[in-house]
Length: 429
Ligand SMILES: *Cc1c(COP(=O)(O)O)cnc(C)c1O
Image 1 (cartoon, rainbow, N blue to C red):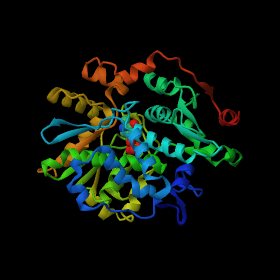
Image 2: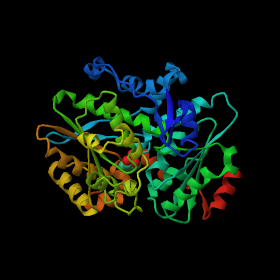
Image 3: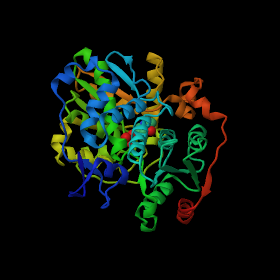
Image 4: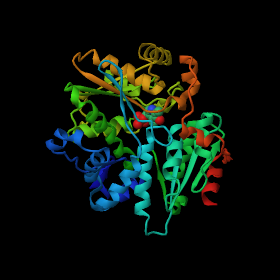
């Protein structure tokens, strides 16, 4: 499969090149040249397939012959080494829990898949790739864990000093080996700006820098699996399925829409956001206006200019009316989010963290338009990752899961930096 740059369809590369580069040289996002469709028999039989078998069918056409089937199956097995249960929250309302992986964030799947693809492509090379990533919290931990020990890859993670939780900081700073953490004296946007500057800096070309956020196709595409796993578990209800994704950079929901294009019978998508409402506003007035991000309690979604939205528009040929048939977007305040968390807990005993609660709110609203539907919201992080919000709002004490316990007693190792020059110096040393 080839990929073209969304800035210039003539600019085509292979899967391997797209994964290694991250972003096209003209700064466009890569997009698959053709979108395959899966046979009806696959959907008829889906409940008889294992998650690994489903994932192989879904991703194989996007990889083509660039990774042999046996190796690809191995990569998938290592990527999906945990469960993705659909849990009943209320009648006809389910939570798809994507947080049972090593860092308890849904980004584990994309990070593990991408790291292993890079490892495969580097298997016989002497060169090194440097994965440079800015994080406001969850991405860093998933990337650190996913890339740990992968051959030929150095990982450098920038995080804003004092702005990530203690657990998140430990997940980035305690692993050692090929994972290096930089504590930046600034906010998330400063980290992001430094990373962007490094990608544009020709004097760093020899470091083979690449990104590990959902811009990279190897992080974006495997997120399709979740939607197939949800369908596999909910198909038996034989009702139109509505899926609500708590959305920030819109990578996850964009993968869901791609899954629908492959033939997955999803009736409707809801992109649920916090007050960073660039996309909900766009659907109302047709004007896409990037904004500065506003901090919220669902901080992994504090994005004012979602990078994957252009991919979604590409899938609908930039036709807003067509797009609106499949897609709705609603935005919620922190107070509404806290209120939903309390309601869910009181009514069903289910503990949702702020991102999942935003997803729940958007789902419930959309289900009113389609009374005979069933709905699922994606629960993108374990409540323990946002314990400073969950515990006081619900008045509970959360037990610490083993994945988190294992990093709590390790020593944090990081380098403090303040300027781009210091980042550059670090990369060159
Ligand atoms: C990254 C993240 C999101 C948003 O996902 P996008 O693909 O960027 O829309 C939602 N919830 C959590 C917990 C996240 O870490």
